[in-house]
Amino acid sequence: MAGKKVLIVYAHQEPRSFNGSLKKVAVEELSKQGCAITVSDLYAMDFEPRATRKDVIDRDLHLPVVIKTEEVMCGAQHLIGALSNPKFFNYGVEAYEAFKKRSLASDITDEQKKVQEADLVIFQFPLYWFSVPAILKGWMDRVLCQGFAFDIPGFYDSGFLKNKLALLSLTTGGTAEMYGKTGVSGDFRYFLWPLQHGALHFCGFKVLAPQISFAPEIASEEERKAMVASWAQRLKTIWEEEPIDCTPAWYFGH
Amino acid sequence: MAGKKVLIVYAHQEPRSFNGSLKKVAVEELSKQGCAITVSDLYAMDFEPRATRKDVIDRDLHLPVVIKTEEVMCGAQHLIGALSNPKFFNYGVEAYEAFKKRSLASDITDEQKKVQEADLVIFQFPLYWFSVPAILKGWMDRVLCQGFAFDIPGFYDSGFLKNKLALLSLTTGGTAEMYGKTGVSGDFRYFLWPLQHGALHFCGFKVLAPQISFAPEIASEEERKAMVASWAQRLKTIWEEEPIDCTPAWYFGH
Image (cartoon, rainbow over the protein chains, first blue to last red):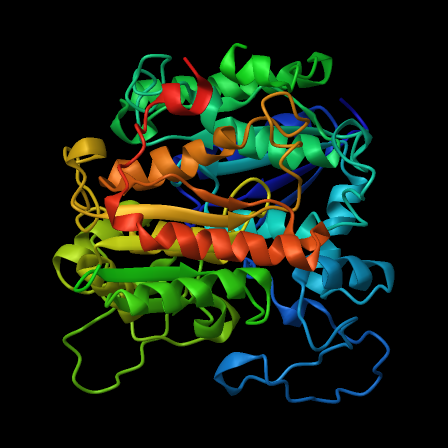
């Protein structure tokens, strides 16, 4: 829909991959609609997944003063900011305080700005161990911090991103049969719970139905094309979709 | 039990944290029993979570020949090995081939050796977004590669790590009530599915019941001590425990 803003958080190493095709077709289709699209290409950005003391920086330093920190391994040196409790490092607390003091690392605040501006966030990734690849998990761990995405109270339906939509578009190694109700890997909705409910819904996102492309690596070229086309087709009416009812019933049928 | 080997994969930034205490008491208790214990302290190791082209190295190079790669960002230079398909990077395929050719990066093979030698692998971590922190997700993504942990066929009950035990020991931010059957975050077993079934069981591990320490940050000092003591107590008879029945029924009651 013209005027809508979309952020695509994309986690694949190979531009010519099937995930790359799904990302490309989404950019094309949403551009045609007049949407403004931003892509965070995590591997191309070499996005940092680790949640560490380095995420608290000193924004007030005008000169590149380099301070040695004992916590930083391998002798690396960094521009670091003061911790709220330097004697006991608690990542969640420090990230919350740093968010409030505007002293979070810029790779985090850059992503937060993109999320803040987006009406819809699409996550495009291959399923790794029933979840997102570590580089994307790190994006969630670091970007969706307390103060920005939620507070206590201020989560689930009151999460700070409650006026936004989120959608997981993922590819699997296993087939649709393996992810059926009686399949060896269990219903695909089971593995969506931590991502859609535990992370996205917790931050307030309204979750659209996932787009799952099953086993593209063992599909024929024709089947792969059909999966890409079906994603493009769905995006034509994506703004008319109602979010799923993100409760245990949707996932586990009870 | 004397003679048993235990690997503790530990993912917390702060040695004096509650997770640090749980790790410490496990080392102490298992040492008393005469077990041989190895700890992989992921943050202290600055463990790499990203699954990239850098994981395929050239083991035959005797001299430190440095080859520039276009794929590596920020102008970094690395000793890289030949890819099975340099024109289309597929991480799963390349890691599988590199495992067979013994050309996986040494941080991966070091961890694989530790897993290979272990009778029991304990994962000690704080829950981040209903899952493991990204640094530990990266350990799973990179270490448990095809050829080492499983093959197709050769997964779930036939997974290559089928003679080993695994146990998740985790701390939560939310309370036990929030993770009750009717709690706002749903039964805690729901979020264990991708980790215990999708990753560990897939590789063949027999999964012991999780050790969940709920909300240590809002507990009293006395309650925290009781949680640490209960973990130490459980470890005294850990070798007598039967694995859980890692099927949908255990997680979802159907």
